[in-house]
Image (cartoon, rainbow, N blue to C red):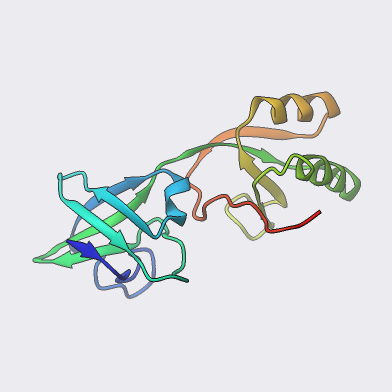
Length: 157
């Protein structure tokens, strides 16, 4: 079966697929940005994904297929990440600039997020960890389900 559209997300209020049996398609966060791929559910069901150009990235809880009381749902694997929490604006700018020069893929969260603080989150890398330790920038290493894939920002030099 070929999936060409997302039928909703089980985390959205009022989604009709929340009360049915869920098969999971477990994906690493990097696969969320791929609009064409082969998938296999935890029940062995094979699916082809072919979303139109310009489609939004997949998200944890997206419903790919719903039939006969079953829904095939995206489940995102947790990622090994560094949650960087600078103490001052100066420290934040220094860390962001230094890590940005490495073309590090990062996401930023505010105090109203699940982190309850202004933080920068990036995929774990031992050289980034060494940099943060060397410069005394506070961080923690965590396993997190990232709702959005890490992406390189478009830029030119």
